Length: 256
Length: 255
View (cartoon, each protein chain N blue to C red):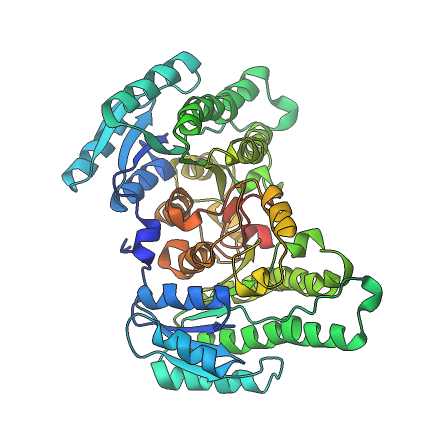
């Protein structure tokens, strides 16, 4: 019975930013729980690699070239996925970027670039897939936010913080608007995980690993695999009464 | 990481308090079918036995205890460790609601009963269990139960109950910070309206309809829909989640 609650067998899922970092770990997790996954990324080679690796494990996965900043490309891509794979039951908005700069020095381009991908891009995907979910009267949307959207923790990240806070507003609004259609909308908010984005920050001396760890009661960075359970849970029927929720996967960071 | 669901729960010792209730029995069943061994705790002996008989697997046990009495806590911990050789999860549901229509009807005895059971009982039980987990040295999972009222505050005489539930959220965060370094996660679940006998008894169709109307998903929850969240939080899949309160309210609560 319990296994059945988390089971995603036969469900089609889309993961944006699925080629690397948390997105790649999420693709694997969804596959392991039985979903068929469309791995969408602007880095198509990476997406192909992940999709092939999933096929080698006996799962069903496809790679799609997608720049989520282009609403028309998003529509075309989602149409193609639905045509090839069938009704889309799960969307994971995982694509995201950072462009760190002290706030006083941040230019319009740094601001716009991050908002375009993290907030507007996720919205285009959510609206496009959401329309289909509303008309099919079922679906679960999981957006990857961040604790940075809730608490001020490091400097030079105002564009990222604003984009992630915006996603929380989007999540709650849509949770109410689409609840009547049995479409659930939730957000998973990680603290610092061992991903390319955090590794870059450490490499570029934005902060040391110890600085990140100091914020986290569990005393370590998250590993990408540790985000997966939260996404699978929210995507599955185990969370059938959960919508509009912000689930922090943060080793206690926001409890601090 | 193994991705069989309920990962890490096979053969592990799990205490479920309030196990005879609607949500508690669904939680106990979900853990049993995830392979865990369940210690059922409730004031109601007969109901406990009935739940025990309905569980998948074998090697489960039950005890009747009044958890408002802190002296029962070390006994429960010791007996669970003796029965199962292991104490890995505490799911603490036991609580009392003394519903009063009006604020002015609340007595000091109402206050003491609810604060002792819900707040004092939770603190001392969680601490006793967590200390045993620290001594075992293998981490652990503690799941407390709050209510959507922790945020709304309730109304009339249920303000006292909801204040205890707010205390549980705060306590969950503090315990998560304190025991994080030992690999023990502490999280809370906030259910909304759930189809249990506690809710449905004497509930008029009009009140039920107003509850449904206030819930974006347009229905009240089944007890099994709460149990899935508890199993998730106890599983390896949630090992990086601590100090969180998960709203299982159909969208009634969003914050």
